[in-house]
Length: 190
Length: 97
Image 1 (cartoon, each protein chain N blue to C red):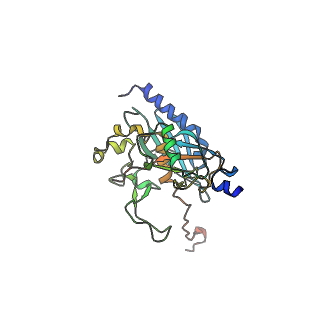
Image 2 (image 1 turned 90 degrees about the horizontal axis):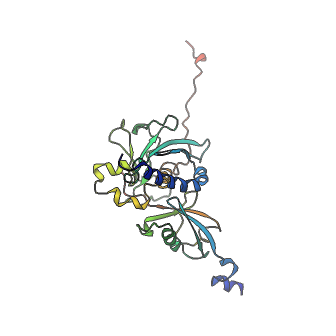
Image 3 (image 1 turned 180 degrees about the vertical axis):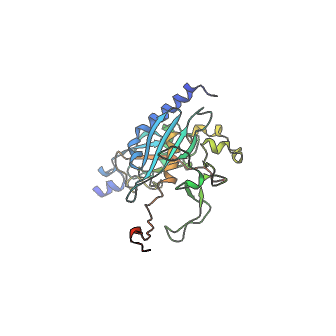
């Protein structure tokens, strides 16, 4: 333990109180904070557009040693809370490539980057954005120090959940159904 | 000369609106003129919530549904009513590397 838990808990509780003020709005958009007990926040994300609405993923945030450390962020199975492996993700949080020109026709496919990153399909992926522990601990981001960013709120409960919602849920328009023939096995002749 | 008053921002239609801007979860209540550009709103919200480490250009303003608000436009042109709640978030940093 690097930070007195009372200090981290105090910052955690303050952010949580801020979040609770607007929790109804967050729930309406499909962002359901189900449990917040220091140091963890467990939230389930659902896509409200389309019928039926879909539970897309859960997210487990860990604020241990906050804010000397940024929070850890894992996408998890919303029922078991087990971290998803990269190959299991329903969404990899696509981000439109800022360098790509806009599509000629609005709504057409456009080049994207994935905010969820892993080296292998069986790895537990991490959210590759500043403000998360996994991003700042990655050797590839050693020049982007969390301590230079922590006052900006990127690691706040509100901001992390907002990023997950904007990239993971808001772009989902609904379900695409694939139809196949349903066999009636008792009618299949010998 | 009601039309003139409206055009000059002095008519009843120009009564100020009270908007709540949530900055990283912290709220700031700010009065704006209906036809004033919203860029100033962002700067004031950042100042009131003590988020002064990044310039206003690094932030995005959205409504509850997540739709972007045009900062060059006004409350009126963005369809914002008195009492509207808006959410100001940092633009997501470089990622995917």
